[in-house]
Length: 343
Image (cartoon, rainbow, N blue to C red; front, side):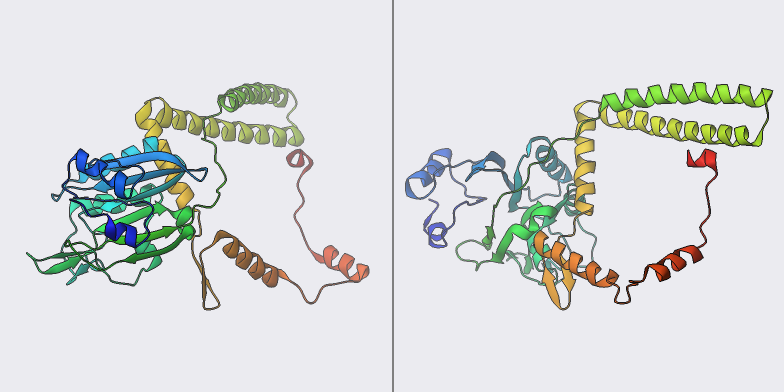
């Protein structure tokens, strides 16, 4: 029988449990002694609300064998169904780093499942919470009596943009089993909602109409230049050709994007979602070190950036005399655009 007392003792509100070896009936008994809701499966995901905040929680237990396809299935489920704040956790049965997450360290090649987990977490914009919070720390959640080594295989993942909401994460002592509990404290807070991006077909139609107009204008200018070959008309014709080539390239890129991401149905939709998550993650500054201090909250990072650039571009030698300023501007030699190019 699974004893809920250790869970209650640490004041746990949500528990991700693995390898309980209990029947559905035994799991339901937790409701009487501790839990309000109980879900059990090899990889269980829950969409819901906590204090009005939408969350997606996923608890996983991966096979002991090297099965990279299982990891792919997990991340496909996340891409298809996750909404709101995401938290993925569980027993992954593989490490993120053969050197840092294993004692004694190993120089051998990582299993395929480890490589797939690391690759897909980066592609999905997720970060290993413990590894992100303590990148140089070496602590472990599992001890193998058979092979006499330690591993960190119990992991939590969260979007890179939400890492600042993790208040604390720690590996607790191993008690009854051969694995240590992993405790995480998270501040849900309130986050702005984002709208799902969709291809704007009106923009595509507008681009096609613009392209037709520029094609007609180019032909008209060519005919005029054949009749009256002036230099001014030639400059206008060259600019019209450049504009048309630019429009053709943009329209071609738009058709390629439409074909690659939309014509193949759900598979392409998942691909687009994956690319967008990776792009959003790569644009986020989730940690800043400045003046021997580390900042993780977005408002603190913004303030430090603002203060740095305000100090960088502040000019103590500001010119206050209009005459000096006018003379300074006159001395700057700038290339002038021709009238057709300016238009």
